[in-house]
Image: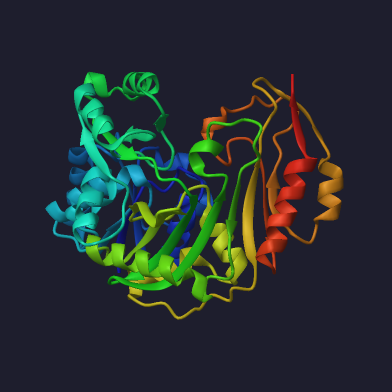
Length: 406
């Protein structure tokens, strides 16, 4: 099978998809923005071919590259795993008559108001929402629904560009910050109170073959706005217990309604006073290398499972559910340059059996903004055979370690 893979060089874990496609027996032609020689030798060794384009989200440039390759030989699939690439690749895929995720599915997984309109019509519980292109449209929605509200770009991922409004004054500030007063397409949503988590899967022709459930502590918006918190992502190994049946049922329903075929998915949800509510979904893997944690907890290479799904239309492995795994972000106490770490030596010794890996920028390293995400600064990834034990380990680390700056 000949598979085209979009952008092998960035972010870092993109190379794992190329590795796995190669290991699954595919001939992999990558399309990227960097010169071929900028890729490391190991990555180049997994490639059958390479096409450079100015931008992989330039539909014309990407389409021209694909047609050049098709002019030389048959292409079976074209795959992308980064949120910003999904819709462009789907449009090129359709124009070039290559099987895979449709433009409709990619669009609905990218445009949040359209996504929720389709899901609400299918009976999936969602927050009230609308798409707005003017400040007046936002104000009208606020008058109808009330506060608090969330404003975010229609095609945002995670908490990127997200603003919460609890009053008319907050709303006016959010309107300006989001750019909706300048015509920037913006999703406006009812704020859903409750605990936030995500349901991820690998699907083959719409059937879930591997799935995982994770929890955010605290919810993403708070985590990305509050410096003193050391936020956690905790992945449960209790997913097969009946308490998670409703989440899994919701996820499978969303996958069916949106027509997701052979693909990874990343779906966020809330559970609170109004029950379980769908938040959003992408037809791609989660960010911040969460797939590494899924693999560490289940004794499998999820990248290779994805490649087998793409290349062979099947998977023959199963999840062990042996460990709960997680990540804790260790925030610097201010902006500047790292001067050192307090409490880290004791943590490394005490929790050596639980630590998968960690990243501690050396003294002198510049800090990154809090909103940069869970891996923007120092972090640790951990495992424990018991989910509550994992939470206890991460809480202890968050209380013990301090990242000092100067």
